[in-house]
Length: 217
Image (cartoon, rainbow, N blue to C red; front, side, top):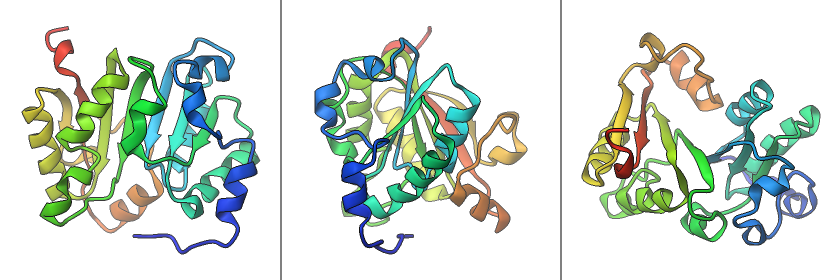
């Protein structure tokens, strides 16, 4: 589902103080940007920002970066942040394919992927944010104790993601095919899509994935 184009959104993202410009210049120095040595968590494809703004408000001891490549979508998240003015939350209008250009080795402590584009055609499988291609990118920026948390209502995408993680040798935990009726439901923060899909009766799938080097830790 795509948000309609909002006139002026791109221009606003270029001047808004909550949107980081030239993120490559902060590579290896993101903690300095937030003025602390707090853990750094990122959400890739953050949509309208409900999930990340809620997390940032609940966890002031953690720094959060939301990554979204569509200006018209990111604008909605920025509007939420303008009302909240959370000191530990910033945004990037950026393509996740270039992740290693903006984060140094081991700089990110957690990656959230929520209701990512399923790219349903087989020829587009490498574009899925849970493909082995992207898992390789994550392995370069995640800290040794970090992990990827993934949620979706798309069972086909979830099965694909489990297979890709296993193929890449990642360690899976907290795997559930019905999050809201599982032991992992406590503390779950819903996205806008999650609220909509749950109301329609769609079960939500979730897992946490850690890099191969962490197996047995």
